[in-house]
Length: 195
Image (tube, rainbow, N blue to C red; front, side, top):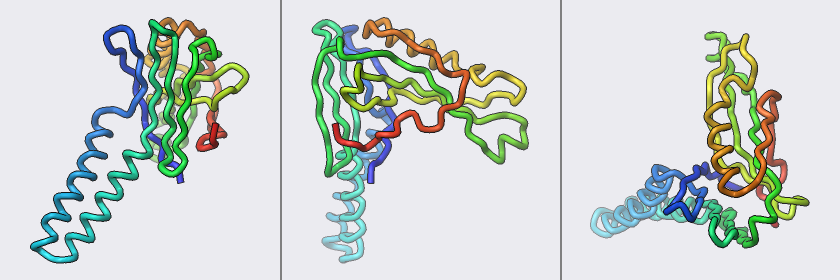
């Protein structure tokens, strides 16, 4: 089973562009791991139940840590390092930014009963990075969730994703392709496949 790790981009010292889980996600993983260890320690005096619960919470934290995905770009050296974590099938890749093909901004129109009542569509906008010749599987760099009125075009809520994609595209020197006008339900059909 592959856990989908949400990613978000951040520039570091204007030399690095890193796509990694948000700090809240990392905090949750750390809290599970270390909280489980505390429960195990409490279980030594309180009983086997707390030791068992602590062990399960620690394993959940460790599984979450091993499942983390990240992608780091060195903008000065024009290289990247990628980690796709799926715990038992973690894959690493390194290469040149010249291998990148484009950034795509995609939209997925998701039906939601609550949104149907308010006459809005729940739309997920994704920034997807693709390698030339599909050397590596594409990766979702960021996702943004918006409510778009039913009578408005699908790309009406894509401004935030488009601005972010343009900024990343300039830094990586790759074109940005806007496909937010059509709904794409599964932009990464090879997710979890080894590379």
